[in-house]
Length: 439
Ligand SMILES: [Fe+2]
Image: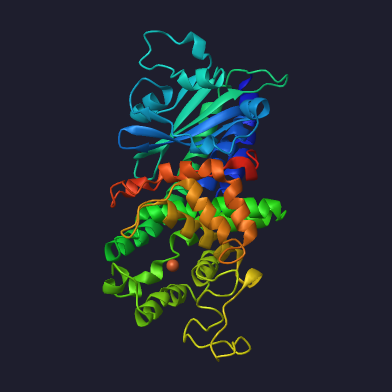
């Protein structure tokens, strides 16, 4: 290739890299961002597959994975993001080597790696999937202070005839340039998720029953239920994207108002009396008031999630149609006794309806100070009994449809994890079925 031709190619590629990097700015959610970082990187170099690994202590944890070939052959799998693949931070994998060395590595034929090379190709993933990762470029994702978030791998560039071709000479610098911008977007999203999880962490000091793992599980379940509901209802992609981009963060804050409830009530072992119950129920209004300005889409969604998560489908929930500032009934929404009537059915936002199912299901399947964990079948049976009473029947249906991932979510965020372990702010693991993998 002539030098002029290479320069023209470079400038075209870098313009594309700029455009793809700019498209990362609209993404708030860590999982969505990782998916988009990866799909854009693949699009930049026309690669068939790719992965992102996040560095945690001495492990590289698979955070996002895409493979057009496997999707075509075995079909998309909702379980794929829940695969708990961890690589050691050592030279036994290309990803481990790049994370250690903090510099890119391009291999055009993994079958021909020099046995004396200071790294190995970790073949187990390929072997398990009957896939050949032939050409692979691995680039570290470094944040602004220089430390590594992890690595991104793009695999098997596809040529004009549909065959795997070697990477071009300029590809390394093009991807490196794009990944610099991607790292900034990732740092921003991780920061926001960490800040949200810290709020949950503070709440868990006040109320030991509110673990960080619980809010992560609820966020993950809420997202899965909403996505299923939205797909079934044929909600347009842009609306689904708008909601799922911020719903996990909003869901993590659903009980933040408990900070305003006295500790003796939160931790009382027995049943609450009427007065104590009324104080406990105020957590919804205390929480909603924190977001009442609704200046941003995230604030507005969080406000609605908090306000609606204890409403019931049959109208018997709380706080009902009240002014969150004063707790006074809203005009036109009084019941026979002059009190605010509960919201019912679709008067309750879908965000509150999915969160209610996620929150109660999680309480059933986990250990509480007052009960042992129920198994999945019994928990689902209880949820079904409450369909049309406490819960939106369509959302309960979504819970059953998501049965294959329920246990995976529980395993991913166990209560047994060290409570103050903010290292657990990994992606929630989002099912890719609802999203195109290429942009
Ligand atoms: Fe609550």
